[in-house]
Length: 150
Picture 1: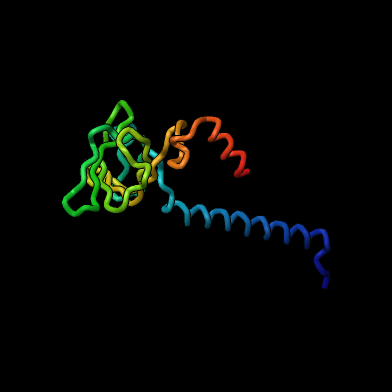
Picture 2: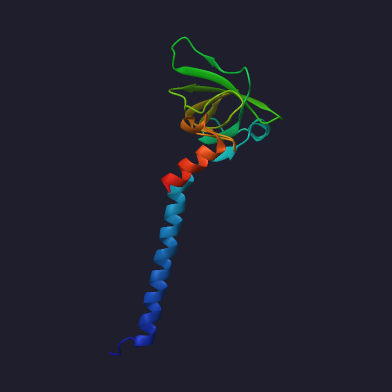
């Protein structure tokens, strides 16, 4: 009996390793397919709403005068807009400290009818954000505090 030549043996091992690597990649992609949350702005969400129950992220600005609290004390209703469209949002839970009217927000959740039901809120601050501790400091004092923390 003739044994497989070393050159062919390496080639067979290389092909098997390549097939295993491709299989692992496809398996990972398939597993993550249902976990992906697409990002929408209000105008995209209104124009092309996702299928009911699909996890998505909605990003935009909290419209001024739109925040209202339900009687249960933990449910917040507000409107997210992007200048072109508006989407009503309902969130039950504790809102982030930076969540205020006129600020940016990313809501993770799903559409239920015409309302976006958020499971999680991420509030964004603008470029002019200053921590509370530094709000009343002069620019020179703030630079000194920053230099001391390095």
